[in-house]
Length: 289
Ligand SMILES: NC(=O)C1=CN([C@@H]2O[C@H](COP(=O)(O)OP(=O)(O)OC[C@H]3O[C@@H](n4cnc5c(N)ncnc54)[C@H](O)[C@@H]3O)[C@@H](O)[C@H]2O)C=CC1
Ligand SMILES: O=C(O)[C@@H]1CCC=N1
Image (cartoon, rainbow, N blue to C red; front, side, top):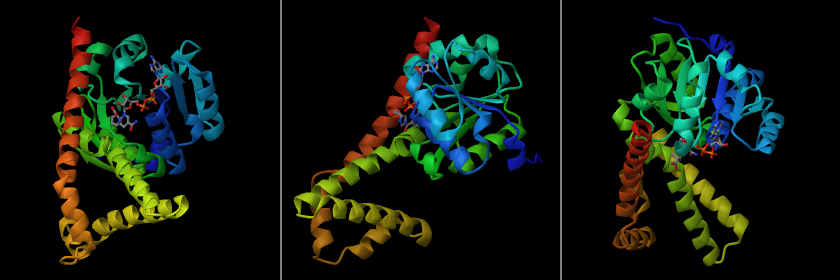
C-alpha cells in the first residue's frame, strides 16, 4: 500500500492554470487546511494582472500572467490544475503540450471535458484526474467527484484524494458519472443559494428586516443540513417531523408541491448534467475539426 502523508504533499509544487473562482477556492482551501505552503502554489492567468495581484497579496501564492515566464511554473509543477472555462480549454491545453512531461499529474476541474479529450490535446496518455469540485472547497466543505485515467498510479490517486479530502469530501466515480456529479454537487451550491435568496425575499416581504432575515435563513439551512448529516435520518422523515397535520408547514409544502418545486429541482439538476455532456461534446467537435 502506498503511504501518502501530508508531509509528502507539502513538498510538491502545484500550478493552477487559470486563476478564476474555482482555482481560488481550491488554493485557499489547501492553504487554510495547511496541506501546502502558499509559496509552493503558482497561479497563471491569461489576462487580468489586477486579479493576480489580489491573489498573491491575499494568499501569498506565486502568480504569473500568460507569456511572462509561465513556462517555468508549468514545467516545474508536480501537479497542474486545469482551471479555465470550457470554451478556453482546448486552446489553453494544446498550447502547454510541449511543456508537459509524464511524471506530472494533470488535474482538470473543467465541466464536461473528458479524459480522452485531454489526452488528445496533450498528445499522450498521461496521468489525468478528472474532477468536479464545488466552491464550498474554499471553507473545507467541498464535495468533489473524482475519476482517473489509466496512467494514474496508486500513489497519484492517493495524492489526488488527499488534496480533495483536505478541502471537503470525495466520491470516486466512473468517468461518465461526472456529468451527474456536476448536476448535483458541482452546480448544487447555486441551487441552495437560489433557495436562500427566495427565503430572504419572503422574509423581508413578511416584514422582517434584512439582517434578521439573513440570520434566520442561514441558520435554518445550516441546521437542516446538519440534522440530515448527524442524525442519519432521511430528509423525508425529518420533513415529516416538522410537518404537523393541518398545520403551517403542511400548508406551505402543499402550495410548493402544487407549483412544482420538487419537480423543478429534479429537472434542473438533470439539465445541468445534460449541459455538462453538451459542453464536453462541443470541445470534442472542436478538437476533431
Ligand atoms: N465555479 C464553479 O462553481 C465551478 C467551476 N468548475 C469549472 O472550473 C473551471 C473554471 O471556472 P471558474 O473558476 O468559475 O471560471 P473563471 O472565469 O472564474 O476562471 C477561469 C480563469 O481562467 C483564465 N484563463 C482562460 N484561458 C486561459 C489561458 N489560456 N491561460 C491561462 N488562464 C486562462 C481566465 O482568465 C479566468 O481567470 C470551469 O471549467 C468550470 O467548469 C468546476 C466546478 C465548480
Ligand atoms: O456552471 C458551471 O458550468 C460550473 C460547473 C459546475 C459549477 N459551475
